[in-house]
Length: 191
Image (cartoon, rainbow, N blue to C red; front, side, top):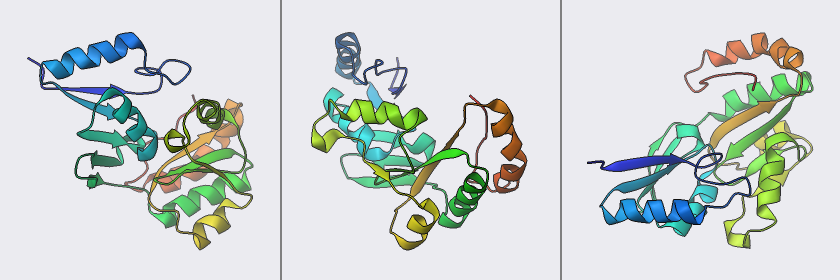
């Protein structure tokens, strides 16, 4: 018998509108009735995952930031934390800015970006139909490097780098590979 089911959110549990289907809610309820632990796992920030966990009653544990945080929802306590240090994030920001490549910084408070593009548009659209307390916080700023240096951004859980052209993306991989040697950087890939 299964003791735990770990479920990804985007493209798995959630439909293209960011909703949990009735069928998925019923399957989760059936599993919970069999004393199977449901753990949501996502690249999203914790506040975004918590809203979905509340909706489906998966109220014990969750994993957010692509594995950078494991959180006990009942105790409101971080059990595991391996986030990106500020100085490493600033190196990546500098490389991206120097090469005019789009990126977002996920923290526990918000997603930080210079503009609404790529994956951030998904969250922006999803926010348009959510209650205020369930929205993914998006913070648009002109100078991210300055903002990170001068503000309490909290824990940096993920950096997403995007570009429409594989050639441009691959062009900065060599520069990013120096940063990649750090234990906090898991992978760079063109998707």
